[in-house]
Image 1 (cartoon, rainbow, N blue to C red):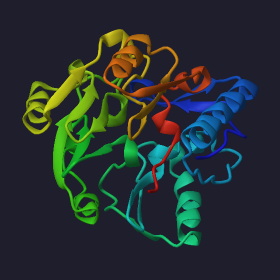
Image 2 (image 1 turned 90 degrees about the horizontal axis):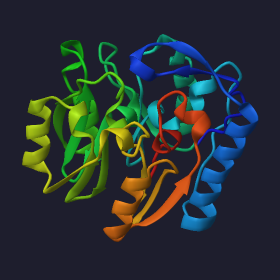
Image 3 (image 1 turned 180 degrees about the vertical axis):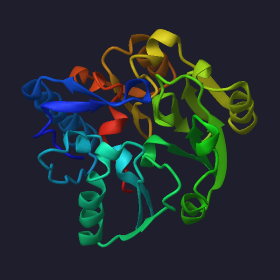
Image 4 (image 1 turned 135 degrees about the vertical axis):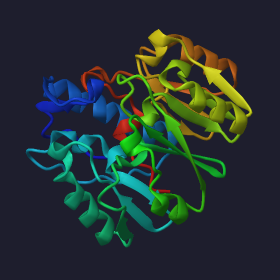
Length: 259
């Protein structure tokens, strides 16, 4: 995770465009700290923290920095040039912590865990335009998973992890209308249980939740999804992330899984 020490003016990712978004920095810091405490004190997760850098407010969205496969960190090639300077700081952190660092070919757009969601033996890859169609094969081979490309058709869901959440090897939570019919067919053919969330819940980023075994951290606005997951046997932790949702992300975007 990366603390929001310089989160005075973030770069919004809504509609896959770049714009400046004013935020309440004090409130953002408090909300981030609560999430950190839920992870560490209530769930017992071990959380590593990377130092924030002035001028790079979106470093707080650590999930986009890359993806970890064992002791290899596969670094992002951000689609937004304004975020590209973040890469060097994440690369340095992982090198200093004993990871091998690699990148995908420059021609590939790759926003880390935002674009790629592992599921059992599959590696789901979300793309919008045909120019993004090809899965970065390096990522799939490093993780020893089979790539499956899923077309996203609603620009409000700029990353795959905003509309698809893996609950367990048999079950996903997803917003069906964010995907093309072909992508829906792929998901239904691969995943045993595809739980569909409503549009209003999807837009509170219900699918951008953190899942750790049978525990799920969700935005406090995801009322129906939280209750449904509770009835399915999950323990739910609801947190307020209103200052981060201004740029169209949920709780998962604040965390990069390293183990």
